[in-house]
Each structure stands twice: as C-alpha cells, then as structure tokens.
Image (cartoon, rainbow, N blue to C red; front, side, top):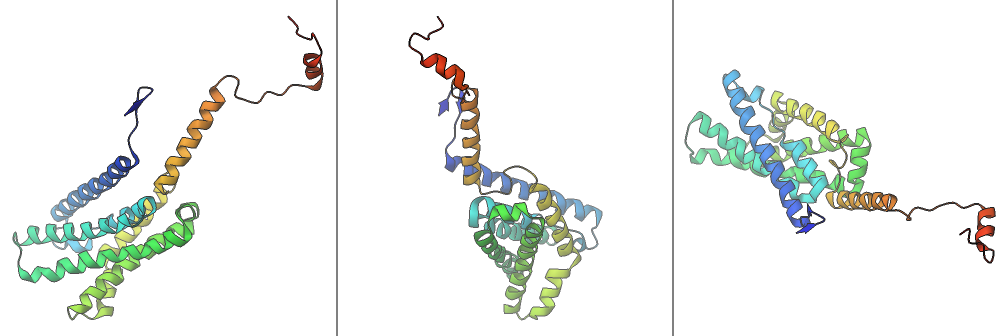
Length: 237
C-alpha cells in the first residue's frame, strides 16, 4: 500500500518486524559472544559469558507487553544448546535439567511486566531510579525462577539462588543490562509502548502539515484593520 509515493505498512506487520529484529539481535549477540569467550577464556566460560536477554526482554515488554518473556526463554534454550554442543557435541537425558532450569527459569522475567502494568513505560523511561528498579526486578525474577526449578531437581534453593544471582556471569549481565537500558531510555520512542509511540508520531506529523499549509495558521489582525475591512465598500481594491 502506498500513499504519496511512500510505503505504508500495517500495524501488525510493523509489530512483527520489530519483534523479529530483536530476535536477530539477541541471537547474533549470543552466538558471537559465546564463541568469542570460548576462544579467549576456554578454561571457564561461565565466569565471563554474559547475555543481553534480560534488557531485551524487558524492553520488548515495554514496547509490546508480555511478548518479551519469550525472548528470555529463547535465550535460555539457545545458551544451553551452544554449551552442550560445544562441550560434548551431542544431547543426552542428563541435559533435561539444564534446559528446564534456564528455559522455565528465564520465563520468570515476565513478573517484571507487573511493573510495566502498574508503573507504566513512561515512568520507567522517565526516571532513572525506575529504570534501575525495572532492570533489578527482571534480573532478580530470573534468578529466583532458575532457583525454583533447580529446587525441583533436589538442589538447595538458597545455594542455587546464590549462584544464579551473584555469580560473576550474572553480575556482569546485570551491569550490562543496566547500562544498555540507561542508553536506550535516552532514545526517542525506544522505551515506549509502540502503539502510543506511533500515535504520537502521527499527531506530530499532522501538526507539521497543518503548520506548513498556507492559510491554516491563525493570523492576528488588529482592531483598526478589522474596522476597515468591515466598512461598507471598504475593499481596498
């Protein structure tokens, strides 16, 4: 569909394109960072590897509601797949716990959507302490979720929580997530509900068009000029 020579896409296609873009960003970052750290720090990747799944998930939840939860789940499954294939080259039944811990555990990031629901994306993006609190909530929710799943497999909950929350890799992910979100909140429309953002853009576009069209701006005329124009036969020509 085209209008005035420009392409207009539907809202559904815009949403699908936006969601796909973040999938690609997350996948490329995870794959590149995993193989980079495997090569540089092959002795113990868990101490250095970090993911952008939490900030991406939190960002998508502001933009598109609960869809963001699936990015964290996808990241957990992708991470487990890379680690298992990189270390053994094949899957076995023993890896089920690994997949469930990171897959289901990461889904707990969806609890952070409660902050979006009640505080609102504008407040999260507008106040630095709300931004930080939002990232902390997402990080803590994931750590608790993984620990709960681990407890079902006989792992002590608090021991698991200590590792998932305060491990070097997790703290690095938290720090990077906070930095990423503080940068994104400065970009217009990035940390904003996209329906509201598109409505705002359309309103701004219409206002500019009105201002550019001749005769649509209000023109002030002094009283003396009005009297002259209202006089019978007052036409200057």
